[in-house]
Length: 321
Image 1 (cartoon, helix red, strand yellow):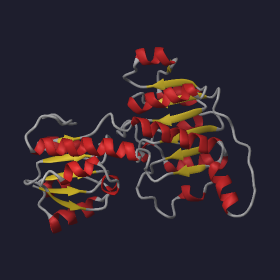
Image 2 (cartoon, rainbow, N blue to C red; image 1 turned 180 degrees about the vertical axis):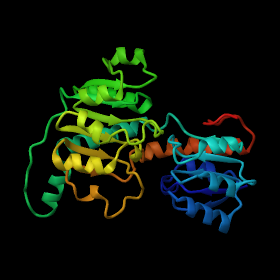
Image 3 (cartoon, rainbow, N blue to C red; image 1 turned 120 degrees about the vertical axis):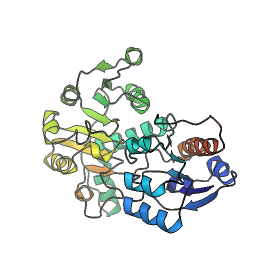
Image 4 (cartoon, rainbow, N blue to C red; image 1 turned 90 degrees about the horizontal axis):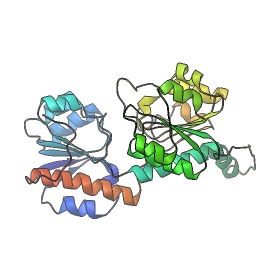
């Protein structure tokens, strides 16, 4: 079996996940993702065919799937976000797509609060000041008693809510599949729409999948609904926001700041407007990149792949035929 491995955190972090994959006896071709559609097509043409793909956020489009067939047997995603894969087309072509839910909620939720504190205390401005040999200071704000609005109350959203309660925040949430039992246990107020949440929260954390409905949900209109000085955090997908509108809102003071682990096109362009705005803090999509989380995700992704190819049933499939 010939496997194409593209996820960099899997490759760069030693552990049981690598032992599991390396010990399976496959021929492994390694590349440094995330790869564009054209890069994927070139790689398949030059080094294929491949029996399976263990990928990160590479663009697995219909063209890429066609290029991988008929040899390709399975796509094993390292992670839970499937928006970079044309899942509908993979299902149409009867290609199983495996993924790894339930492995990264702890580390992503911790990252949310790292970004949240960094924006509230204006870390980027202060770090730059000290590193430049100055001692410039701005006044930040506390998180205690702030209203925390969580968009998407899945595994990660719930972990963010738990931590928010410990910080003394008042949680609100919107999710079409609202968990009433969890909400009752943690004092979460149910919002009936995105707009209602946007207008009520002091701090907003995005945890939605990227779909046609949610793409660009944070835009000039919805920013206008928010309180002046709102803090916005995004560890989900860059496409959930209109980045030009975010930049303007941070410059004007409409947003106290924006903390994000994701941008619309990764890696970030060196001329991206976010780079020169002090109250925008960007990390390079490392919210789930800890030693513990990488090994959990990696072991699950490798086990998915190995078990599927060896005819065992212990794997998690995202699509159904």
